[in-house]
Image (cartoon, rainbow, N blue to C red; front, side, top):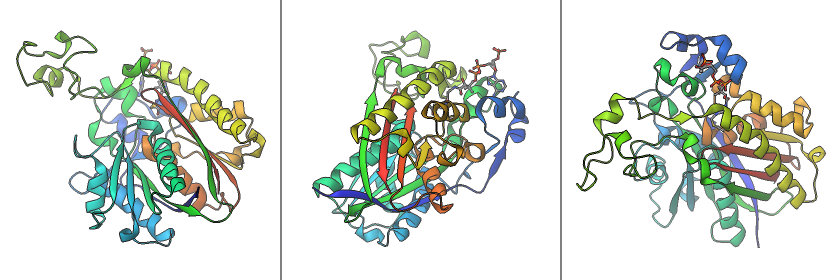
Length: 351
Ligand code: ACO
């Protein structure tokens, strides 16, 4: 059995900075409200017609590939985590392959739909493939173009102010030294799937929530289930979130899944050199930090600058912490995420 290391890491943030003040021009909100509840000061938005979830991922991937000392043509598998794909299908994995100009058709591309915990799931899958010896150069990315799917009216303010765009990527390779992904822990509970969800357009046919709500035609007819005029008119085409419900579960599941990983390796919270939480909300991260009794110098938060970039938030933060010299060879790095599904997970990495 092989060991897996993160051989290279990269990130990409669009240039366009959107401050809380900018958002007050289009919806009824304030800088004070946003900072107090979420810690966010500004976020980045991609540029329409010029950038997409895939192109941002490609820019982050190019950096990760170069830092891994490898080439695009040597990548033998792609794992792409996002909740804001360019297309309903095909997934971003193959679009990234094309964008990077990888013409090697021997490789595979896999799309991960686990929202905020998407990167942890993707990392875990990549780890298993390296360990088994099936692949030797796996590109794992998290990328999100939230800004093109949000409701910028006041009705959508509780969700819209939180999210931002960006991408992060790593290259996984077999390790022959101390560097190693020690463990990953993955969990899910679909009971409350709709509490944090982007439901339409979808193929649910009104099954979960009642047909009338969506203005469907007669259920005995075919077609017309993807997007009805009623959905558009009533704004049922945006993400919805029960914020307080999410908050309460998140602060419970983050510590649980981190402890689970630590215990499985015979480690303790005091062994953690750097904790990179999914950047959901600064208040959630601070709550978890307090429970884990971690010093400020051992936690990396950047939601203040980028907002919540869902599947991209962990690789962006990991990359930023590494670029800042805060993660060194042999350090114990802990990643953890909780999000829509609900799904949650953690990873322990000996850097
Ligand atoms: N600006 C101003 N006022 C707002 C805004 C806004 N952007 N959004 C909501 N409000 C108002 C509401 O309308 C409400 O007004 P009312 O009291 O007159 O009815 C009031 O603020 C309080 O609303 P709540 O939703 O109860 O506010 P809460 O304190 O719960 O904060 C928040 C909302 C920030 C979403 C919080 O619940 C939260 O962070 N939850 C965790 C969810 C999360 O982190 N999601 C990230 C994505 S999921 C993930 O990554 C895990």
